[in-house]
Length: 213
Image 1 (cartoon, rainbow, N blue to C red):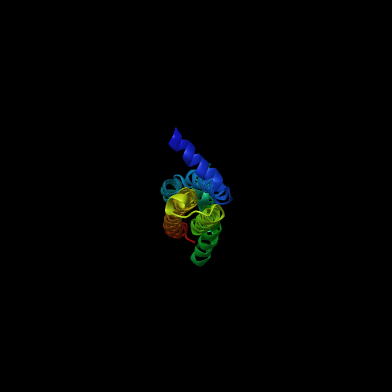
Image 2 (cartoon, one colour):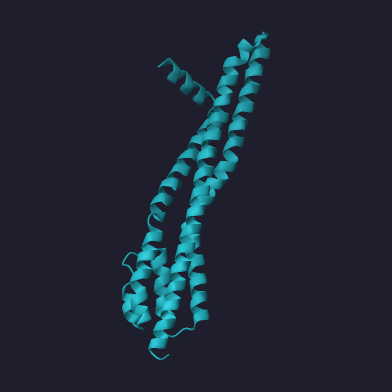
């Protein structure tokens, strides 16, 4: 109980650094949970939707393929819907342009606010360091006012100051790890949708030849 009280007391005494770091950590956790939910299963749904649509497209049944777009309007569904709706008449070059344009728009949506994680990861250690420096200055100032010396006099003040650095490092490590994770995951989702879109374009080309177009 005493350890918990001491830690809480140190935390509250360095409020000028610890409180902002707590606020940053809450924001980061919120973004992390929201992106985990938002990105869940997008790649698998894209592959399943493409597999269902390839058959009708190869047979030239563009309306049937369009009807097979999933009812859940996620990033892949929006790309495929716009692609297939033009597949019956647009040339291949135009279809590839639609794929690029639509995926770029969806990529911006997939990224969401993960830039906040990168910013937090870069700034949190400096906020913690600021709290530590201020805490050490206060500790030495107290020693000068008291007119006594020795490490034992400033040990408590230094320990209180170092809690800011520790908290800043914890927040930064978590933020950077999840920023890199989301960045890689979004790139994989984008690549999956691109591969599926290319397969749909190939199937549409086959279907148009089957219809004599």
